[in-house]
Length: 122
Image (cartoon, rainbow, N blue to C red):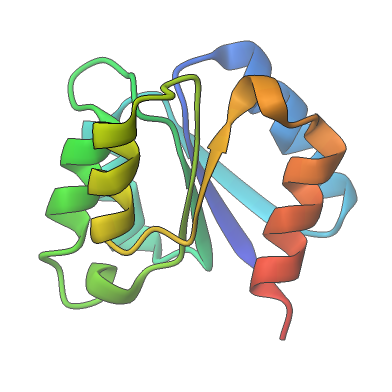
C-alpha cells in the first residue's frame, strides 16, 4: 500500500484529504508542522509528501530544504499545496526539486487526490 505524508496545520484540510486518500486505497500519515513532518518523513519514508508552506515551528520551505540534505529525502516526491502565491517562493520550491506547486484556491479536493494518485502509480 502506498503511503502519503500530509504536512499541513489546517485540520479541516487534513481530514478531507485523509478521507479521500484512504477511500482510494492509500495509507496516510500526517504532521501539523514542518519539524514533525521532517522527522516523520525521514522515519516513515512515504511514497509522496503533500506539503504546506505556512506552518508553525518550521515552514514548508525550511522543511524541504532540510529534507533534501538527507540521503533518502534528496529524492523524495513532494507536492506543495499552499495558499502562498509569491513568485520568489514558487521559484525556491522548484529549485528544491518539488514535483508540483498547487495553490489551494485553484484546486478542488478531487483534482488534488487525482494528482497524487497519478504521481505514485506504479
